[in-house]
Image (cartoon, rainbow, N blue to C red; front, side):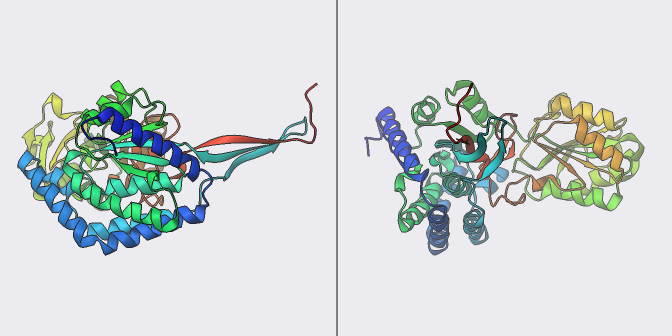
Length: 421
């Protein structure tokens, strides 16, 4: 390993080894990649106490930095969350191997038979912040898709990431795969991020997973292509034909289950016809659940609210804070979301099928929901086993990025001495 003071040399070395590992993974059997993930899951469970102890170091570091409760929750690992990490690895291992899958095939008049088949992208760079489970999720998904990966975790999760990474390496070793297939940048130095963004010879795509500051930096400075997830400015719209019980259940879960994740609802929109009934009940229930509600009239008639300001619209709070306002109709809700949303996830609560279809057709968020909590905006909940992030761009990968989305494709063309006239 190069001297950690020489970040350029360090990252060049990591990149070269990742590129070599990617070439080996491209032809490694799917059974070997799955076996590596199952062995890594075994290692996670065997090392659960050590992982939680390492996480304790990270939590102490984060508290010293003054991180808030929501961010500490994102960082924290306990036995249940460690078990979930292991389960995620096993879920990815059990999925069908995406490599070599035939996406489409056809025969043209010349007699050529053409297939479009899935192939690895190559080397993925993942830059993330405080959630230590991303170490396992990103490593697993990249490996499943036959890619090598370079992981650069946040300074807050430094020790947790190292402990989890060691388990991934144990899995690679057990399956006879190159240990350089999953590498963790061994320094908190931010210069490593700048190096990754310029490693066009070694990294094929960068996936940033974190707050607006991180993702904005990556988008501005990257010379490598980016799968971007900018912000989770998530809206829930209560339509005039919303079922009261469903509305209350969806809104409460969308906001309160975990306030610090990107699928947490940040803004409640209420049809004017139900402002004093379902809307007011939802706002009251959120306040009772400990949420600070920043509202515009007439929702300010609900006891315990505070007045919303212009800066509250389009805000990703990632905390026990939510904005709320009344709109005249469904098109008013759509207009608000188009202006202030981030294209991540938006939900309509309604029993009116036509209204739901209108909402789905007029908005182009990566994920649109009807009568379901936005906390389901997660690759694991979509049956992908895990996700590397939610891509809000429109090219290549969009929405939850699982193993299949971390592949490219190539064309296989077969003839029989076929020539072109």
